[in-house]
Structures are given as C-alpha cells and as structure tokens.
Length: 108
Image (cartoon, rainbow, N blue to C red; front, side):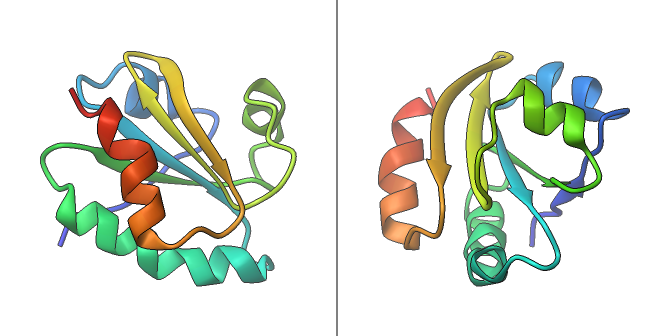
C-alpha cells in the first residue's frame, strides 16, 4: 500500500512542487464529514497509482497560506498538480470512478 504523505507549508515546496511525479493533493480537515467519506477513496487511489502519482494530504485548518494560495473555497478539495501547475481541481465528494476519469488524462 502506498504511503500518503502529510504535507504542511514548510514541506509543500519540496514534496509537491519539486517532485518529478504528478501529485494528488488532498485538502481536508479532521472535522469535515465529506473529507471522512473521501478518505478511503484517496487511500485506494494512492495504492492503485503507486509509482505513478504521489498522494499527499494537507490539513486545511493548519495550513491557511496554502489554502489562500490555491483558492480553496471548500473541503475536501483535490488538486492534481503536475510540474508545479494545477491541472485539475475537484471540490466535494466524488465517487472513485469519476475521480479516475478526471485525473487519469493528466498522467502522461
């Protein structure tokens, strides 16, 4: 099973922007019910995409400057970042199949 890296404002540059793989960034919070619903889906994707996509989690409450920088208006929000640029954004819960359809075109 692939590891989901917990990222914060201090580690974001290295873990997300400077990595050579595409990155799925999960902005969430511990109190957020839709985040809890999405969590197992993100874990499954991390396992299935192991080696292809890095998956990271950011606590929106603890990292306000990243929330501001990326215009996060609601959580959960998933960003698909490739070569430092946001290629796709999904806010709210979405079934796994729909997430795969949204993100997989950006793998190559």
